[in-house]
Image (cartoon, rainbow, N blue to C red; front, side, top):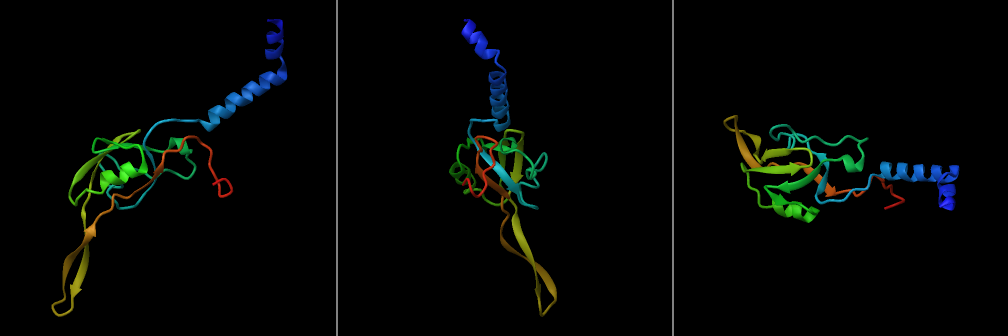
Length: 153
């Protein structure tokens, strides 16, 4: 017992333990499912969601503090492929929910129109050119706060 007490009262051992605990706190390892939001496009369905818009994460935010998508329309999201398979069948003017670790958002996909001028009569008409994008760029959920550079990838 005295040998163990001697080890834990040693200054170097105490500094080592404190440094290890601090490193674990700063790295902040996490586990769980879902996908992280990397960015949100301006004027997209996500930027105009209800009750508030989904915001792009700031450049200084830690990877594990990003908003995590947990479910789309009640379907659990575990991987990037799950996310894309759940949004592939959405049609224009359809509403759906996106549940994240911070809130639940309700989005509506709208049709996109382009104004066109007819030369002979100088009238303008709207021509449908497609459907609005959801506007979310996602990636697999980070497991810790270590930011990898080009040399670590």
